[in-house]
Amino acid sequence: MVKIPFNKFNEFYVDHTKEISGRLRSVLESGKYLRDKETLQLEKGIAEICKRNFAVSTSSCTDALYFALIAVGIKPGDEIILPTFSYISTLSAILRCGALPVFVDIDNKTLTLKTEGIENFFTQKTRAIVFVQLFGHVIDLRNLKETCKRNNIFLIEDSAQALGASFEGFSGASFGDISCISFDPTKLVSAYATGGVAVTDNEDYYNTLLKLIHHGRNDEGKFEILGYNSKISELSACFINLQLSQLDNTISKMQRIANTYIGQLSKIKEVEIILPEPSCRSTWHKFVILAQNRNLLREYLFQNGIETKIHYNPLLHEHLLLKNYNYKITDLSHAEKIKNDVLSLPIYPGLKSEEINYICESINNFYTL
Ligand SMILES: Cc1ncc(COP(=O)(O)O)c(C=O)c1O
Image 1 (cartoon, rainbow, N blue to C red):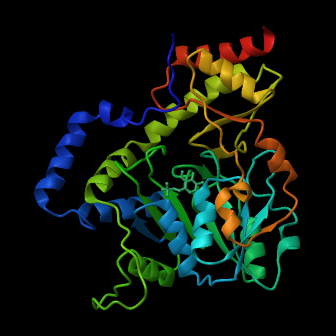
Image 2: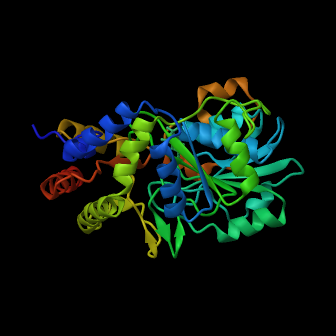
Image 3: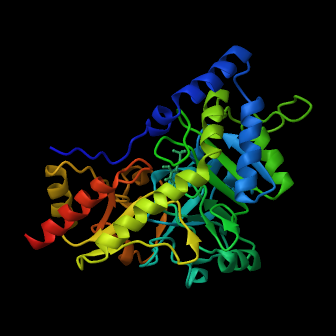
């Protein structure tokens, strides 16, 4: 039977084994494993791609989000607005600060936080909004940024999935007071392990982030604030730098794959594709459809050798861990409906045309048989 996995995490390594092995060997031989040449190159490269002044790498995007909230001064009891449709990290970073999550619904086309009418959820205690850029697409947040500014509210951008994406000259991590990116193995650019980075234009936040990743240590070597130990290894940074050098090529491959999917799936009336805005250069981190009879379709695809995933169900406000925390919910009806329809199809640079054809034919067969 055909076997099409959802992702292939070793693809880049397999295609660039010689080059990677050589570079990794130099790192191992150097004896410098943390915050040396590769990490500094990574931070410079990411700041350039994101068009931001500063970048600080971390052990994970989850840590970057947590540190971002600390850096802007979030305190226990502050209210933070977030979409209920995201990965757990968006929520856990808020809970780690002792802040109160306020779950808001999603837009029915983009599945990102519904920003229209967002001011209705502002209270005296609202201190931040965490906006999540989903699926490698970028949403233009200029208006939201303005709204936040007018109301003295921080905008933190969860750009975990948005590295390399752009929109009219903005990057996928342009809009947040601090924006956070992930290098976990599911991402287009990934570490050998976990990894993340926070970007900002504000030098004070940058200096605080630098302290937070290293036990709160300042330039004079004194432990000035309560900090953490959250760094990326030089080996991972080296692997990431090699992927960054090929990012445009990788994104082009993803776009070709997405276009092939779009060409074929647009003909199936039971399927709706979550598309980026026309002027957005998406990286297609995920190819997500809304599918009628989603669960039966998923099972049918599985029986035919095609692995799919669901992003996201349960919704954030439905996670078990919340039984131990206070939180606020608003009308979440759209997210409640969408969670039963979303289906993520396989997508990675090496996915072949014949495989995409087979996936699309199988979806078509499911609805016509
Ligand atoms: C939307 C979103 N936020 C945050 C994260 C957390 O990233 P990390 O695994 O690097 O902590 C992810 C990772 O999958 C994500 O998709």
